[in-house]
Length: 148
Ligand code: AMP
Image (tube, rainbow, N blue to C red; front, side):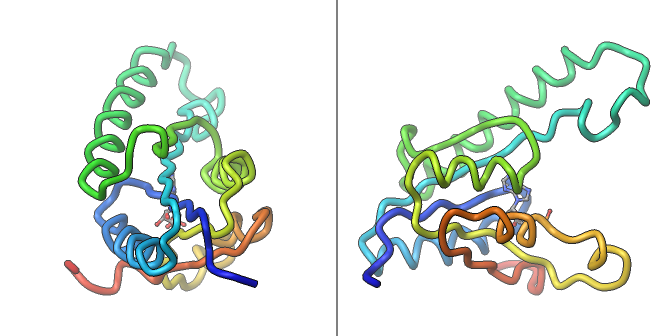
C-alpha cells in the first residue's frame, strides 16, 4: 500500500469545515496527492417530505446559488481548482461515497462530532460515509475548539 493519490474531503460549509480542510490539505501536501472537495445540498423535500404544502423550487434555487458561491470561495482559498470542486444534491453520506467512486478517490476526509445520547443512536454523516465507502475514510474530530 502506497501513498494516497487522490483525497476527497466532504465539507458542510460550516465553520467546522476549516478543521476538516486543514487535515485534508496537510495530507494532500505530504502525499503530493490531488485534492478534491464536495458539498452536498440536502433537498428540502428530503428533509421535510410532503409536510410543507408549498412549492419549494425558488427557495431551493436560492440555496443552490448560495452554496455554489460558498463552495467556490472555500475551495479556491485552499487552492482547489474548479474541476476538483463538486456540488451535488442528495444525502451527504450517499453522495460523498458516489463522488469518491466517480473520481477514483482513495481517501475520503470528513468531520466527526463527538456525539452523545440520541444523536449517537441516529448516527452521523461520518458513519454513513464509512458504511458505503469505496476507499479509506478519515474522520477528523471537529467542534472541539472555537477556532483553529
Ligand atoms: P455531521 O454528521 O452532519 O455533523 O457532519 C460531519 C461531517 O460530514 C462534516 O464535517 C462534513 O465533512 C461531512 N458533511 C456533512 N454534511 C455535509 C454536506 N452537506 N456536504 C458535504 N459534506 C458534509
